Structure formats: C-alpha cells, structure tokens
Amino acid sequence: MTAATATPPVLVGTGTPLLGEVIAWACPGVSVTHPALVAALEAAGLDAGVARELAPRHAFSRACRRLSEQRIIRPVSEDANAVRFQFTQESRDGDKFEYTLETMLTLDKQTGTVTCELPGLATLAQEELDRCIAARTGSDITRVVQKLFERQADLFPIRPQGGCYFVAERHAAFVDKVQELMDRVAGRLLRFPVPAGTQEGDRSVTRAVADGLAAVVAEHRAAVSQFGTDTRDDTLRRAAERIRTTKFKLAAYAEYLSGEKDRLDRAVAEAERELREKVEKITATPAEAATV
Image (tube, rainbow, N blue to C red; front, side):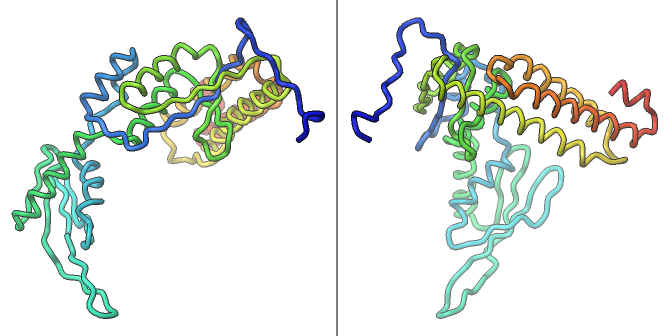
C-alpha cells in the first residue's frame, strides 16, 4: 500500500468514550501452589471459591502422564472409597510389543494415599500425586479466569477458535482485578481498548456481541430439543431461568447490537415458545407449562 492510498489513522485522545476492550491472556509455564492461587485471588479482590481443591482422583489422572512412561495405566475397578489401577509394562522385542502385568495400585479417594506391592513405584506415584494435588498449572488458571468472567462479566469471542475476547467497558474495573491476579501468578493479560465512533470498530463489536449472544440462544434451543419425558422439573426450570437471563443480556447490550437486536429478540422468543411447548407435551398440563 502506497502513501497515497493509505487510510489515515484514527486519532484517539484523552476522554474518548470506549466501547470496551479486546483481551487475551496466557500462562506459559506457570505453576503455583493452590494456597498461593487462593491468596492471589483474595489480594485481587476476587472470589477465591473458584479455585477449588483438586480431588485425588483427578490429580492422579495428571500424575499418570509422568508415571505412564513405558507403561500403560488403566483403572480396573472403583467404589466409594478407592480406585484400583492396573500398571502394565510395555516393551519391544524386535518388531513386536510385549505387555507384562507390573502391579496393581490402589488410590484412596478420600485421603489420596497410594498403595501397591512395589515400594519404589508406590513412592514415586505418591510423590507425583502429591505434587499434582498441590500444583496449579496455566490451564488451571485459565479455567479460574473463565469461571470468574462467567460470574461477573461476559466474554464475547472475536475469533472462532476463542482466545481473544471483547469485554464491554462497564466491566473495566473487574478486568483490572483480573489483571492484578495474572500479575500475581506470573501470567499475562493483554488489553486493547476499543474507542467508540470508528466505523470498523463499531461494526466489529456489534458482530462479536451479536454472534456471542446468538450462540447462547442456539445452545438454549439445542438443549430444549433434547428434553423428553424423563427430563426433571428442576432441569426445565433451569432452562427457563437461563433463557430469562439471556433476555436480560439482550437488553443490557442493546447499545452494542445496532440492527441485530430485533433478530435476537425473535430468536429468544422462539426458544421460550419451544420450551413451553415441550413442557406442555411432557406434562400435558398447559397451566404448569405457563408457570415454568
């Protein structure tokens, strides 16, 4: 592109209103202890309850990634108290693989204690399990951030694969807290303000918000289509509540939706109608359907 045909830059000065910001975060190589993550959440003024303890059963699944070198680990039985795993040694003899039973290992689901007949392997498994119970990876922190946004704000993907999101300006204070959290756990949060009044910026924000809400409505309709006579009443009520919440969001984001709001309103109304019809069919009681 030559200087003669280049689009002149949009000048954004102090006091320019913002639609919001595009954010992306990453936690490459991050590993923190669970207590450290809880402390970071509390220091940032965020809900520490999103950082739950990792159950021994799930932690052992992570430990198996290291323990499975040259062996195959499979659960063979489980009850309320323990899970038993078979460790099978894998070896190669010429052009064939051979498999030999190495040991059976038992994991106590309540205490996280590992027992097996090979003391060395039991010690290694216990050490790796304890490490996985204590450590929180970058993926764990990403899930924590996503849970925080689910409770406090909305993330609208700006690319089909996710990873980059638009967040409305009204949530800037909350994003500040997430920024502090990421700084405390050695993660990164990138923030790109989106000023109001630029043609492409306004259009892109409208599309991101509209597409995000349309995807939510589509999820509602897909869920309703799967309901049948065995669907519980509380499931139906949760579906109705989620649809009502989406209606509130459509009103809250009306300023971003431009000409898309009417289309989305109709889609939500259709989801409500489908739910009422499905409830009537399940219960054969129109009055009860109206209540739901």
